[in-house]
Image (cartoon, rainbow, N blue to C red; front, top):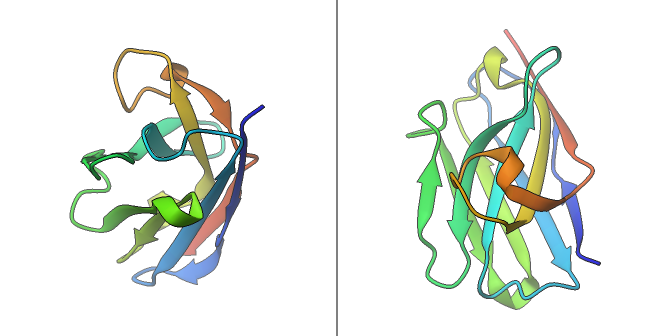
Length: 124
């Protein structure tokens, strides 16, 4: 069974930065779609950024473009999300996911395996 463990969340003021990490085990990390998703209280889970670990191709939600950077280290089976210029609306639980089953790459329903999440809180 695939295991994903997120870390790096925390509380920051608007304009600050955080770097999230997702360590993956029991999975062919070197060739897979892997993504970051978030869920704010009372809202649906949404895609933030996605990367294909074989070639590093990256995709971003409009809300993340220009502020967030997704990256991976195949040797460490770890994916990262560098988040800069954070805004209060970025607040939420951030999850990493893999095992894409088809469909839109940033659609949470397209992924089978999930981590437990790491909380990000941005205050104004």
